[in-house]
Length: 43
Ligand SMILES: [Zn+2]
Image 1 (cartoon, rainbow, N blue to C red):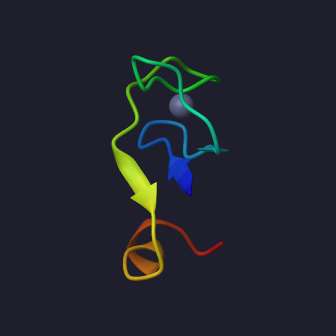
Image 2: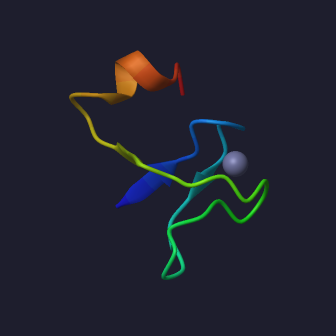
């Protein structure tokens, strides 16, 4: 399962315990799922 950062938009497959983006340090709370992906990104 992939996660998408709401701040920088980067995707990450693995999160640390605090669920923070590896790139910008923002907290990630969006899971990339088929029923949501079209609202989040045009991938
Ligand atoms: Zn980020």
